[in-house]
Image (cartoon, rainbow, N blue to C red; front, side, top):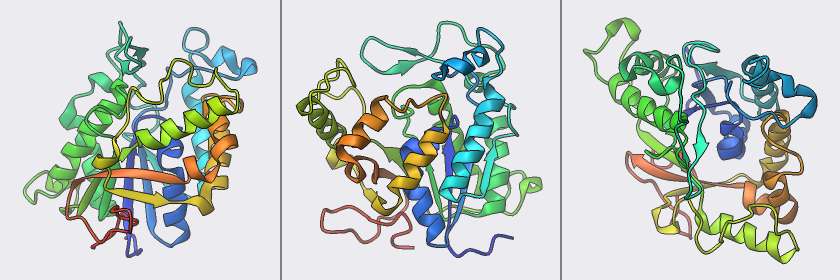
Length: 301
């Protein structure tokens, strides 16, 4: 039995997604005594390998990236202080589906996708695995991506579908009693990238003479993300930015130290990575701050 009064569950597609989108939030709530649970749906087997000495792990060579990324996640979670992290069905149960970039700057499914990938998983089968976790943890708050997976990756889209369906099913008393006592989360959030925040970061990079990071991105026409009027909450995790950046470094096969994430950090620091935004998809909005946004995902509970 989890004894913490406040419990929050994050559902992500691959190792590193959690740190990029919610690392400061997770670290903040851990520090405040909340119980933070992370469920990762794949081991990220199809990801790029940015470390030359580890290039042999790639899918077109040894196809051994998944176990390495599991270890990266273990290291990242130790940095953030998260002790309850799990893979949906166990590590490697669902395989990374891969993706390709579309002409408009969003992601989409690859031309060929293996049948054992998360994208092809039966929705009810995958959701039942999450139902059991939800009923065990009994979170008041669940967080995942929006219906587009935030930028189109098929595994992100599938994670959204599974999280939405499982959160509903977990609260149905007559559904799969063998999976535990029913539990209905009070609030459900979609993690969000604020277009205005990203645009400001790109403008700072351009002003500093960096024209290669986010090359082709027009700060006045960001290809994906959320407009300010669609945002409902912001976690100001400035005190936890250092932990977030260290956790990002742990995902070294996926995040380059001289890549766009750290370029933004060097120019904007806490401003760009400390503020993590959310959209409220289910539940009642709680008290808001001076900017009209909740400053606590447990607000009103």
